[in-house]
Picture 1 (cartoon, rainbow, N blue to C red):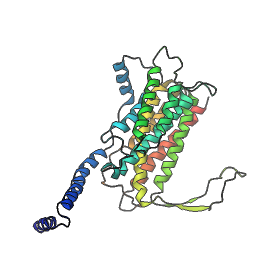
Picture 2 (cartoon, rainbow, N blue to C red; picture 1 turned 180 degrees about the vertical axis):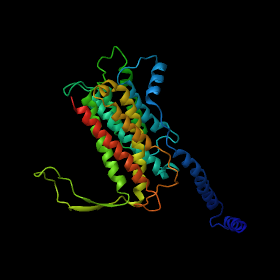
Picture 3 (cartoon, rainbow, N blue to C red; picture 1 turned 180 degrees about the horizontal axis):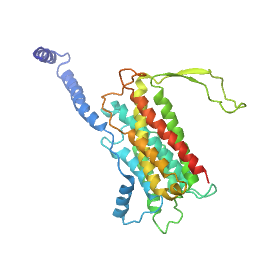
Picture 4 (cartoon, one colour; picture 1 turned 135 degrees about the vertical axis):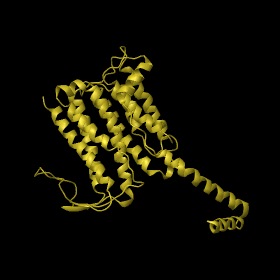
Length: 344
């Protein structure tokens, strides 16, 4: 250690460029020293919250009486608000240290953002409308496109500014739901509306499951046209292909899936509350609770300092395959739930 210190002091005294070089080197060193603990702190994902009790507290503070849909809209607002105001704020569009280096939390944010966008679209397209010919609610026509703004924009306009505008519009819809004067603002908790949104969730989870499973690489048969003898596709592809997630992207996919599951966990709890009578009539509440249980398992603590990619039954764990297992089981439960909702 003494030799290392002596070497550094000698290097410092004889550094080419004199004071300017030493000042520049000190600035870089200070940035690195400060960025490491700050980056670790910013990378801690937010804790889970109870959307039902939080919505009740929010309504009590505003002197409001909760109506159908209030909890789900509040949950969406809370998810996006968490992205913007957690430690470090919204990190995905950072161009300076330490945010520019924090790819894990950035991918987690993207997973949350995708589920938030899907729910905002469902609110605009289905939940707030009584039928296909009904008029869209004005606030949701503002909120939904704002949440779909570029996730990596840092200049003018920034992603944060656009998402804040979306939050303001979403809050106006949330408050209008409990206003007796705003009769145009509605939230229709119907089985068909819920089924439509679950279809989007099913597609998202299916994609995440495949990307997670490809961490070790696997040969897959082409089943794109299975089930329809006359089906066609644009270009001819191989009947068998090897699918493998790039080594540097394995942890990115893992944390995107973890963020997506974190958001879905809260949304599903809110859905259980607002769609309670529909679920009870279809005897489907237990299916929704099974989805919630699988999503809760995706949030267990990762004790390893890095995402491992062990293969098969080898010595090391494969965190991606463990996550894929929970995601796939949640997706299977969603398929069962949609089947129950589609029945009379």
